[in-house]
Length: 389
Ligand SMILES: Nc1nc2c(c(=O)[nH]1)N[C@H]1C(S)=C(S)[C@@H](COP(=O)(O)O)O[C@H]1N2
Ligand SMILES: [Mo]
Image 1 (cartoon, protein in one colour):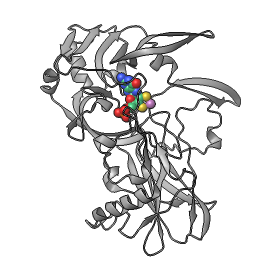
Image 2 (cartoon, protein in one colour):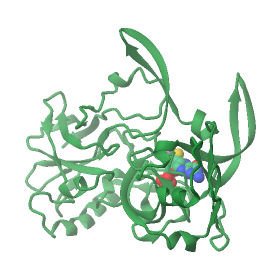
Image 3 (cartoon, rainbow, N blue to C red):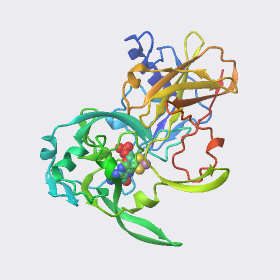
Image 4 (cartoon, rainbow, N blue to C red):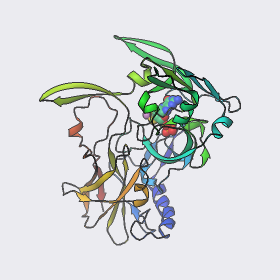
């Protein structure tokens, strides 16, 4: 089942979005697409663009973003082992291993605990341009992980906190050139200081509705500022142990191999997929009635304050873009930016964005990322191509 998004659909959508613009926010008009604005098609996307939309996975169409929060039924979604059957009536979250009081919590038990909201947008670590549609933003609600662990009482020797989903299935384990296909449960782990920090959330709702099956009903782990993979869906067990957890989706499937130059010497390093690497991308370009063009885009990051977003047309200078103050209020949400392109000439152009954070990290170019051999964490600048008529 795939959904075709034709250019005509997109134009209809932009007209539908326009009504919202009439609410009028003088400095930041989002969506900055007035009624008469027309989308300029990207030539780096096939037309029509066919985005994967199966019952189990969904890639979002960035050109259709029409608000800060991605609606629950449009959130991007993916997983490795399909959707497990979870019976909500008999569901229990088990907390086991190195704890003083092992727990078995029903949904009612969880809902009776103090809850907290979290605005958090994330992307799959495999997300990349030009579609970049494995990303979304939402308002989640749930119980802080810390509260559950405090209730269980973590023993002093506990080092590793393993989070298992209810999903399992055949997966490949490679060892010295041989591959073993064995049944595996989806699992991810956190170290002690990460697990006991105040940040991780066990979420049961998204945008004020219970999680859908896609989002991990009834309960998922969320680690603000991190990539998608650690946000374990259909959470069924938290196992506390001393040894390092080496499951497939922790130790092998999700890692990055890259060359680093240390004291003039090239070293190859392997790192785990944790915090999101600073990324921005142009999501759409629309022609305004007065002939100017609006460049609208998105920033994804680990929650460090954003210093600036800049936009460049062809090989011109980097020009400052405007960050949307509403999205800037949320530490872990995605951020929107706008740039008004005033003197677009007919013909082919590229439009590129780059983001810089307060730590001085600058979104790299594709060339700067060449030393990264594996494809995850692809956060390079994406030059979008289009033709002005
Ligand atoms: N139990 C479980 N949780 C999982 C996965 C999975 O396969 N099983 N996939 C992870 C990956 S790789 C991503 S990108 C996110 C996707 O979350 P979403 O479907 O809510 O967008 O879920 C993560 N959590
Ligand atoms: Mo992912």
